[in-house]
Structures are given as structure tokens and as C-alpha cells.
Length: 208
Image (cartoon, rainbow, N blue to C red; front, side, top):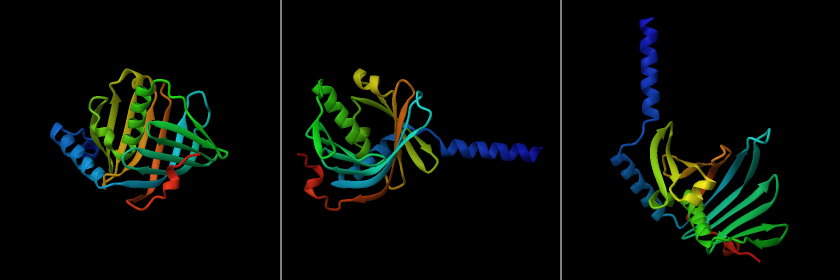
């Protein structure tokens, strides 16, 4: 029995170490390392798998595709399964490309949309960690990842997302992002096959 208790205590300590919250100095050092990494990335592309969970639906909706990012603020999501369509964030505008046709979304509140653009691009390149005026960020070790829990301070953004979880791998690349809505519904995006600073054709970010 004593051996079992010892094993339980040892296992508990190991779990705590794997999920320990960062101290202020550790958080500062990690943010600086992510920022330094971001400075070296002019562009980035990766494959992604997106999972959409909604309480009103019986099954989680899965999508696959490819993503391109180019500094300072160009971002394109290209969905290939189950449907073909693209989302292009460019010049503080959102374009939806489907069936060969392009629609520019009516952003309404341009200030809010600009914040949303910063949120999307920042979640991908890690710059969101520097947006202290918009978000509160806490860090913790989560297995092999560093998990950043990002909470919106802006009331408009908080109405869309109660929390954003960003998982960084050992190379400081973002492997997973989880966008949690106030209702409890969430979208999870897992990325793989990263390529950095390789030439991306200008046509990728063009629209008709």
C-alpha cells in the first residue's frame, strides 16, 4: 500500500510539473522568445485540420486545407475538404472566394473588424501575445506544448470569444489554436507541415 501511495504521489507531482503555470519572469521570457522567432518569419504556410463543435449538432464538423501568412498582415485560409472555398484577410478587409467568385464582406464596424484581423493574424504568427491592450494572457506547460490562455479585454471581442487557447511547440511554432465562444461552442485548428520563408506567389493573396 505504501508503494502505491508513493507511485500516486510521484505521478501527481509529474502531472503538476507538466501543467505548471508560468511565473511572471517565465512568461516574460517566453513572450520575448516568441517575438524574436516572429521577427525571423517573413512568411509561413502550413496544412490545417479544423474541428467545429456546436452543442446543437450531433457530430463535430471537420475541414481540411492550407494556410498562407505573409508579413505584415496577409492571411489566406484555403479549404479543400469537405468544400472548396477561401478566406482572404488583406488590407484590413475580408474576402470570401467561392465558385470562382469573390465577395468582400461588409465589415460594418471597421474598428472592430480591424481588431478581428489582428486577432486572426496574431493567433497565427504569435503577435497576439504582444497585444496587451486587447488581451490578458497566461501561460502554462501542457505536456509537450506551452499553452497560452488568451482572454479578450475588449467587450466586442469578448462577445465572440470568451477564451483563446494557443499551443506552441518546442520550436515556438503554433501547432493548435482553440477559439472558445461564450456559449461553449468552439473551433479547434491543428496545423502541420510548416514551411517558413519560402517564396509564396503573389497570386495567392490576389482576388478578382
